[in-house]
Image (cartoon, rainbow, N blue to C red; front, side, top):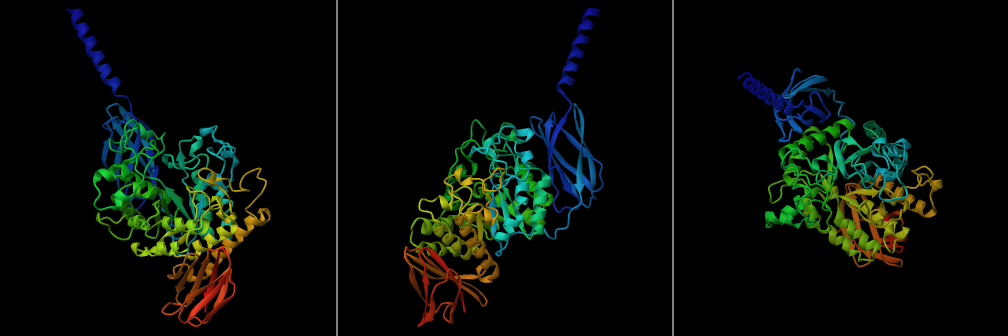
Length: 613
């Protein structure tokens, strides 16, 4: 009998021990966002990452800061906590997380907000944007070329490897950019990436709140933005929410069942075609591959319609605006995320930073497609995406075709004829090159003369121009990754330094001086900023248009022919009707106003720019 009692007691103790053994103590490895601000207009949701977090209860004692509902993931790796802040003072809040296995504490800082003046300025029609890929621009801190947390991925001799460029390198060359005439910097993502060589571009994020070790630290981000603002320049963050890097922990351990579209093993095949989204008669089945497909079959596709992910990304955007003092966003792969998400995301952003500016990447050459995504009005789906503007890919293709490939000049007018599709075509971001396309000077028949003609059109046409780093010095380069060469002079050991005139070749200086002059003209003439555009002539070899703002009128004439031409423009019933003379501003030759027309001589493959008197 005693032996039976002992056996039963042993079994009970064993079961009790096993029960406690499975309820292990909670462990917290990360809290997103890492901090917030007192009296901020938006209360965040905390996402706590760790182990043994099932059925967690979260509490704190901090005046005017409350914990709302706490929800744990099924595997106990995540806890979502809604915070409610109303009038709390800056300080450190002490949180306690309790599970059946024990407790874990963490501190969360509420910081004082900096004054809004001088930051979150957005972009306007007077601006000129300069696109920088930090890894290929300048190495300002060689100590992070091969950082301890990501050894072995630095090699300037490999195209798919880190070359050493960083945030300090950008800061070190703000004078160069300011002297060129740049007012706004767009940097490709500085977020923490997978850490392998192929991620030098920054688009394979693994930590939405981290800074890539190869590029520097959060202080480097803040120092760059502060230095840019001191020079009257603005900074845009390149924001990627369609997908993450393939080695993001979420790929195999998503925080919610609907955090991703599919799994690593089973996911939708992508469709790189936006028409199903634009077409009001398309089916949900046709739209699904566009919105849910995994890029290149390996980048985990984020389901931004998941409410918790949507809140996570909204909080993250607000956090970056506040922590770095940014001025706006370039929104990567914009159409591949749902319009309903973007609408709510923008509503939250603009409620805190009303002057900020967002630019959506809609990579398509059809104005009917691109215009559909610009914000400012509801579409057939009843949704206004909210995005401030989009890149003008149709004009990019038109300029490249006309100037670099021998296409007819009237194609420029054909693109401009669709401007009524946009809420405001003057807000479009125009460009002739970016980090995803072959360089202007990488075209088969490229010359500096053609590059300068393309730059003249870019700077004088309606829209806000964007310059790809290196195009101002006629940098060559084919398709990706050859279009991402290092900027000469930005790295230790470079034989030439194109950041200074004495280090440029004659060809580089010709391109630089021409663009610099164009940007000066744009600053000096309101007509070239937000002025109305009237297209006056479009033929196979010539395209002429007028930009006007009040009494400031600028006439622009392209001659894409191989010979000098006299271009005759009728003035009757046009804004040129009362013109009595022209003053050459750039590439001006003989001109005459007489007998109901304006006649100008224009050199081969040249854009003449004139002040209308």
